Length: 351
Image (cartoon, rainbow, N blue to C red; front, side):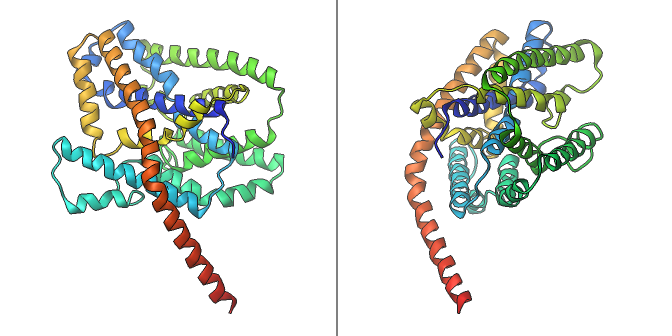
């Protein structure tokens, strides 16, 4: 499939936004210094977070828009991608004080089971495995039936899950949320029929107004109303947050341009998540960011953190192309072995 630079740019922006969201969630929310802030430096992170809390939903909307075409080769590639960064981050942790253990070294080779954290990795694997079944069902649905399914998913995830905190999806950090957003993405791809210029105009206006209002309500709640916990605004099954993700995503679908550089960089986008959110370096990463925020004026701290994120982001994107040089030959060998085994099994069954 030919990469579309507009969508690849959105993918990159979403992954970069993830860094700022995690900075707020894992650093600022636990910072005594931030708790004492008032005025602009108290509200600025809320404005940033209102823009950056959309990335997981956007990432899955992209998957739904194009449709996940699961093959054994893709699953093998996904395994080696996760295993590589599991091992790499474990080795990095040894350099920053972690003690070596053969048992710990074995964990990154089981990223879908033994590796803690990486909730998105496990949820996305489930989505990949079930995507052929979902796609088949969607292909045989009428538009009316599809709308019924979407309404059911809204009720399950954004009503029972978000409002009533039912276990099926109480925070949007699970497989159910990914399935929910994937179905929305497929519906938009198959049934959205709006002229591109009109769609660009209205999604631009709606996204700006809606996200700005979202930030305003968040600030109002955080400073004066205190109706809900601030973390509520970050939940992915929050219908308003999901709506903002959809309109921003649709706006990007209307942009048309081609950039080999963006397409090249976007190939490594997922590695940005895998490295910084690995259990092996997770604590050291956020402790370092917390130290920067505590030891500097907020304006200086944000500049330093932003510079670190830029260097880290592009560094990991480039690193992933080196990773491909290492893992692609191994993946190809495993794929050949798989094809041979499956071929032999088919011959045995035909006898």
